[in-house]
Image (cartoon, rainbow, N blue to C red; front, side):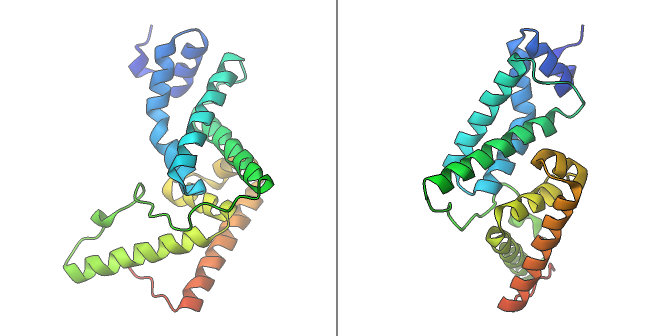
Length: 198
């Protein structure tokens, strides 16, 4: 029998379904950083992201125990789909309670930092400023556009994977990306921003 550390996420999920709780600990370890980064990027509030992250794993545990997981080689995508649904439920509840949106500012420090800048002080300053401008513009995008940009560029998901995760067609995913790019270009023009990494 395979050692738990050598198992794929799908094998770990099946092992957990068959009663091995240690398998779930490894599933959590394998997926927590990517999943939490995605949730935080979409909701832009660490406390809300923590709650959604926990609820996502509670729902995943429930679905696994109810036998609602069919191994397809895409456990991570299955988990992201659950998170997406929990986030949408949160947005609906927020709208119903007429709460305001989360903070407009999101430093995205969990995605990239100043270590990307290489060279002299001036180049580092220009690079940091450019990345900050891009992040600010991304924060101004509507949530569905921000979500697709994050999945595509920061998680390197295909449009097919994005479509499956968010429950929309590939054309809708492509359309959201197109509108995100158009919106960011418009923001660059309107604010006379120069985006160029040194």
